[in-house]
Image (cartoon, rainbow over all chains, first blue to last red; front, side, top):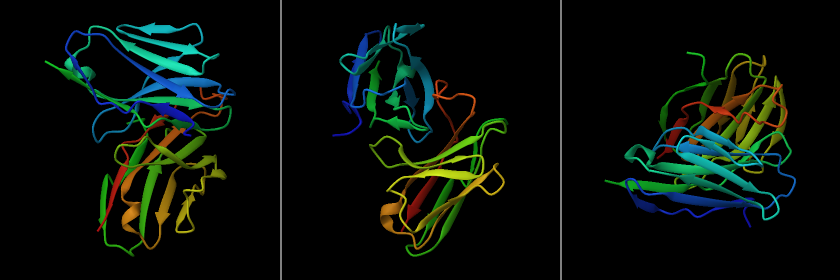
Length: 109
Length: 117
């Protein structure tokens, strides 16, 4: 079993819709959590950190459920520019980040 | 440019040849990481430096791979006797040591895309 698991998609969503991704992690010692965004053939870029109380950044909302060991990302009012791969990322209390395989999202006009 | 810099951006090499990639991290970042990413997968950890010390190596890093960070600044990743399975994007990232639990995440470079033919 992978340490960080995501549904690879693809998710094809009409513009303006709301879309949600979930991610599960296997290590209860996880210290910090993130969502990264990766455009085709580009490097991953930090989208947002995920805090225990949940956090919002504009149209993006991230939530963490430590008891069930999952993380979610909600995108409201999706834009064409949101098309990308979204990577779920964890720090398991060591010196590195562990990445999921990513969920591919395509926003359809 | 104060970001993480990697070069070359692309490298095409014949099987069996040696290749070397370079990474220049953000200047005040003590920690430097190498990852490999293949199509349809997330980045996979290869190795990690704190200043000039290589503190962890993944099992993915076979004997043909070697990484150095001699002065605690830039780093090189060398692959000897390349194989077709080495074709991937090689990503470098850095973070400051003061961010103990990596709460700020990493900053990645643009990567070096290796194609072994």
